[in-house]
Image (cartoon, rainbow, N blue to C red; front, side, top):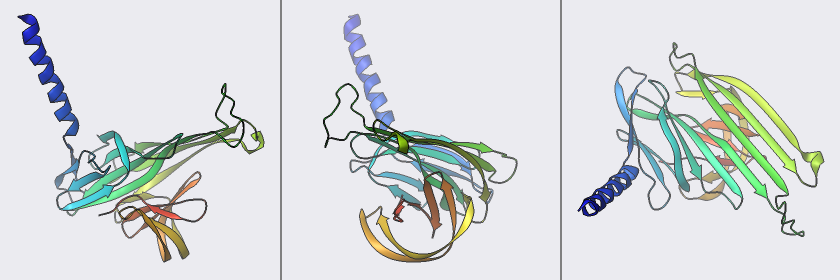
Length: 251
């Protein structure tokens, strides 16, 4: 009799846990206009799309494997860390900081916060005892400070490291730090204003395609070690070493 009772109970527990995993996460935050609102982080759909909602405003991220964490930072911000599909031997995490004001959802920061690659050179005989030829790791930690002022500050710590089995002359290990203030008018954290006037190859997150665009103007920017970010028309873009721009989100 005990076994017959336990089995249904266990099945119910499993079903409840599975349902909980697919429910949206809802975070209550204070808008910068003084009202209260709810930011909803929906489960990743079958196409790998992560959707975040506030009232009628929404943003989408594609090629998402899983949400590592989503939490409320303070009364104004939530932070979402999610894993993005990358190549073989790679791990890639993005961090998105969100806030709200006047019924709009703002990406206060959107960055690559973790990247790790174990490169194996299959063009050469592979050492099965130590297969990795080049190991790279890049990590960004955020610490939010000074909540007495509207928006506060964020302290950034960046670790960037590369170690090679053969070309040790190219190895490096760098640790840098900076503090960013919050711009209450733009609703973002940034380092400086950057004047841009050039052509870029821009990756569109919605169409998953690239196109050439001429971008001109002065935009908020940040440099986190090897990675540079521009805030252009309400969206964060990441610039690579070749001058290409990649958007994180789409409407």
